[in-house]
Amino acid sequence: MGFQTLSLKGRALRLLAGREHSRPELQRKLAAHETEPGELARVLDELEAKGFISEQRVVESVVHRRAARLGTGRVKQELQAKGVSPEAMAAAVEALRHTEVDRAREVWRRKFGEAAPDAAGRAKQMRFLASRGFGTETIRRVVSGADDD
Figure (spheres, one colour):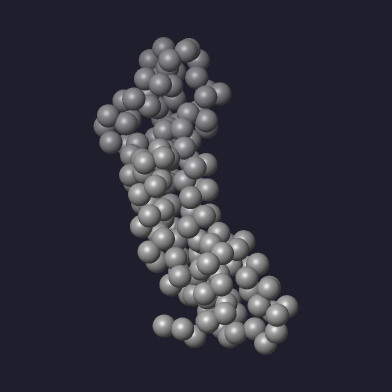
C-alpha cells in the first residue's frame, strides 16, 4: 500500500507542479489511479493540510491568466469547471465586474482598433466580444462608444 499511496501522491504533486489544481480537478484526474477506496481522499486531505492544494490560489491563477483576455462570464465558467466553491467564485466575479468595461475595451482595441463603419461591422465586433464572455451591456458600451472615457 505504501508504494501505491506514494505513486498517487507523486502523480498529484506532478500535476500541482505544472499549475494550480483544485481538489475536484485532482479527484477527476487521479480517480482512475486509485487502488483502494478512500486512498485518493486521504492523499488529497494530506496535500490540502500541507498547503499544496489551495482553492484561493486556483482562483487567483485563473483570474491572473485569463482576465485580461476574457470577460467575467468566461472566467466564471472556467472556475466552475475547476470545481471552485460558489463563495470563492462569487468573490472573484464581483472583483472582475469592476474592471469589465476597461478589459473589454482593451480586448476590442487590440483586435479592431477602430469603430466599425457599418452595422455589420459593429455586429461582428459585438459577436467577438460576446464569444470572449463579456456581458451585453459592456459590449454595447465598448462597441457603440469605443472612444468614451
